[in-house]
Structure formats: structure tokens, C-alpha cells
Length: 159
Image (tube, rainbow, N blue to C red):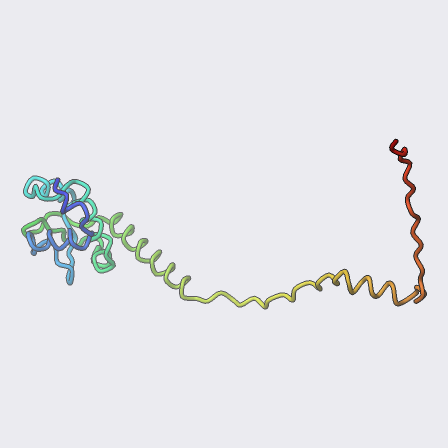
């Protein structure tokens, strides 16, 4: 496993496969692949690791164009482009369900949610100074004299 291929994106990996087997891997007109085609690729191509091959095939088989071509009874192809089986009803149903789920997700992301009117913030608490002034001006007399008592010291005289 080379260090240069570890950072390859699925698109780069797919381009590698389409360069080697253009009859099987065509991004513009994808055709359903033979079940177990990864075993054949593994035998013929030692350049890709298992993880890279898995990512490349996932990128190819999850494309919307590929999923749209998976109709029940459609011919599957091998690496040479020859017919190698047919698409089963279960595979076709799974592909349609994936496409429908993607479409629903896109529609839900595009539909704006109803805008909620912002609620007015609660009335702020009055400042302490304002409360103090309100209390003192309403009922209290204006000429207040405050007397303070002086504290006596009971120290002993120093001799």
C-alpha cells in the first residue's frame, strides 16, 4: 500500500478504475455492475488497497445516475462490458428507495421553515437608583437630619 494512494479521493479512485476498465465504469452512462465484481478487480489490480477499492465502488454505485439505471431485469456487466446477470427486484427496489430518500431530503432542506415572530424581551428590572429615588421622593420628608452617636473609647491611660 503506497502512501501516495492513501489520500486519494473516491473520485480519483473511480477515475483510476474507469481508465483501466472503460466498458464497465462509465460515469456519463453507468451500467449496473456484476455482483462480486470487486473480487475480480482485486485479482487483476494490485494498485488499490481494499479500503480504496471499497470507497471507489461506493462512490460509483451511489451515484444518482447509477441508481436510476437499476431497473428490475436490467443487464449487469462485468469488467469487459459483457452481460453477467440481471438486476433483481430487491436491488431495484433498494435503489428506488435510496433515490426517493435523497429527493425527500433535498426537498426538506430547500423548504424554508415558517418564520417565528421574535418575542418581545421581558420588561427589564428597574435600576436600583431609580427605585431608591422613587421611594424617597414620594412619602419621605425632604429635611432629614441623621444623628450619629460617637463611640466611646474605654482605653486605659498609658502610664
